[in-house]
Length: 212
Ligand code: 5RP
Image (tube, rainbow, N blue to C red; front, side, top):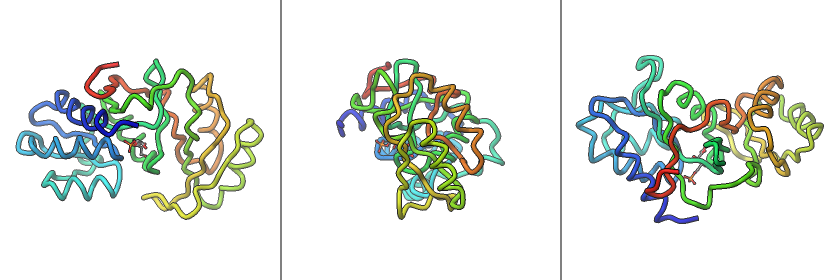
């Protein structure tokens, strides 16, 4: 993990920000550098749609208006980090438990610019345990379904998401077909969001200040 590359990536993403835009903003330590850089341009943008209470607090602290996605409609740009990224720009996200709002904003955005350091690059997704947000009463049900599929589900005990739900981290999957797995898991009742961003991958990945 390189803090310097995270900072470079956060700052490099600024070049995708257009005057007058509303920016979708992800969550995490890399995004924190982006928010700090965005603060310098705050008079040139309308505001931001935030993916978490953590990012909302940061955006407000630096004076960037936080807007409601229902009011803004489609966004032109979403900037967010990731826990893993493959060569097709498919991602594992949710290490910070903000995956649901992140996936909503990614889906609502024309361009998803993903900002990472080089430690996040992988050939095959799955070494980082796959986060899944679940409705609390479905935790055991979802866990059994994951075991049937060869995964080892571990409840992120004590963590409650911004949506009042729980997170299961799935260990032991080598994800050869990310779109297939995402589609399959999306059918299980009680799963709110799968932290695989494969059906809607990133459009641009910045590894430090370099475009992948
Ligand atoms: C939060 C996320 C983050 O983007 C991911 O965990 C990366 O975080 P960081 O930039 O701190 O390494 O998906 O839910």
